Length: 331
Image (cartoon, rainbow, N blue to C red; front, side):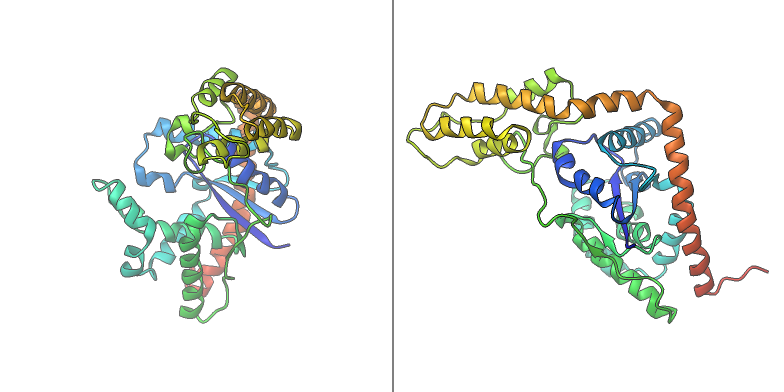
């Protein structure tokens, strides 16, 4: 069975874009592949979070992924810092990662612009840590978005360089992988691009949002003055609302409002009220699971411990073999 590895950001709550995009694919993948899903708390240190924020964010992400359908009895779900072998492999890979190639990384350049007063070594070597996360389990498939493809290419570079340096074909090449033929793109409520936390809180509907919060967000969504002629093409901000409705509403509801728009009878207030209620209904089961799991401390500790044990079993085997290949010997 092929191995899949994917990192999960340790900051931020899950929104509809995450759920209908990556997470539903993860839930399917875990039944057909040997999956490792980790919460990337080591990566988050590049932004210097406070200890309370770091732990709280990790817990929230763990809770929400469990509520969304990841099964710790099937997949290996773990916290990155619970597997010290990752940091050891990161150290070894850093010895053959060169300054020039790291400085050319697009994400490094972006981070330098975004946080000029905190250009730390972790930002520079971020792709090396990402490579360690992947190849520690000798994964061949990595579900990533477009923004991570350069990092995955660098992971292949580091894996192949290790193999060449030590004349040992040990690490396989990891490749980008999507479980479905096309990723679901969930638009935001700002009338522009995709749903995401980076675009502002009001742009995203989170799985843990209470009904009244969802209603307020949707009612503030960007609209125009309405169509002036039959079958008029929808501008982007209106198309976004219909695309959201296509995901969370029934087909009859979607067709009803589409007909009203095409005949110049649509009332955006009614459309947004319906969309909000359908979002509330779609997220209700997950929202209730989030509340239930978040209050079950013993279960969360059990999941984290179980995941760490499974991940370390794989990682420690890799480190033993890597040490042997490099030439480390115990006296």
